[in-house]
Image 1 (cartoon, rainbow, N blue to C red):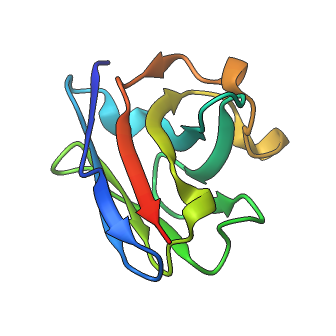
Image 2 (image 1 turned 180 degrees about the vertical axis):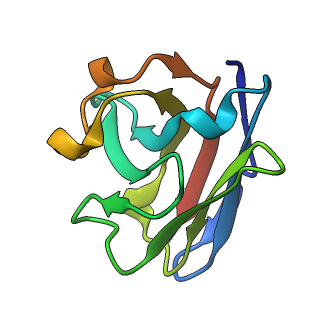
Length: 126
């Protein structure tokens, strides 16, 4: 599956952005999806997860209550709605696909994902 992330940009602190990740291929609905981010000089970190059906989600503590992940399998797209943005949310955001059996625990590690998009830059000014 090929992934294309979009929707990044420059926003003031307290503002909102919605990221999209469009997937190619007819098997999108069989993949669970995740969003990660990587700030300059830091390792890539988990942000949010959604199961293939959309019924299960998980979030990093740093974004819980502010970010919402969702998906539309008919459109082969996963979204990340980001509200109440903070300067520390500044990073390149990546979407990723996995078939990791999340019944064993939600996948939060980079190595648990099989396919990655190219990333979209989010900059939050103070």
